[in-house]
Length: 150
Image (tube, rainbow, N blue to C red; front, side, top):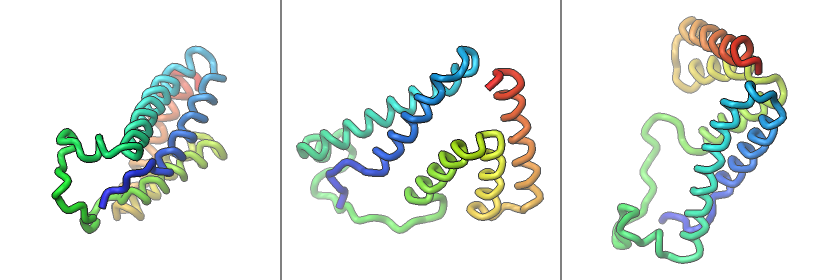
């Protein structure tokens, strides 16, 4: 059965993204453009999700509405996980990226997490994963460090 309460992981992600947005405001005008835009959109979407969860928990209006695509007579049993990344795994990767950004910065965190994700989560060849991570790291470095000055 679908829960009718606010998801605490959404609130955690809202707090994390809000703090990253707040930190980006301390950057120079040119450097904060992209992080501010991405952060503002993300925080806005998370606020909308939290508001929907709140309204859904206050009344059954949104949960039982035909717009949600489900009728109240349908079964809400959870389906087994069929490949890909589960919600908890996605939250763990998001949390690891957040901690990595805070501790060592994005130019190191992004290639390392990309390599670890490709090798261990996806099961990709380590040579391909290493090459892809290095190329991605160089692109991130050139775009954000050299061109934007972040």
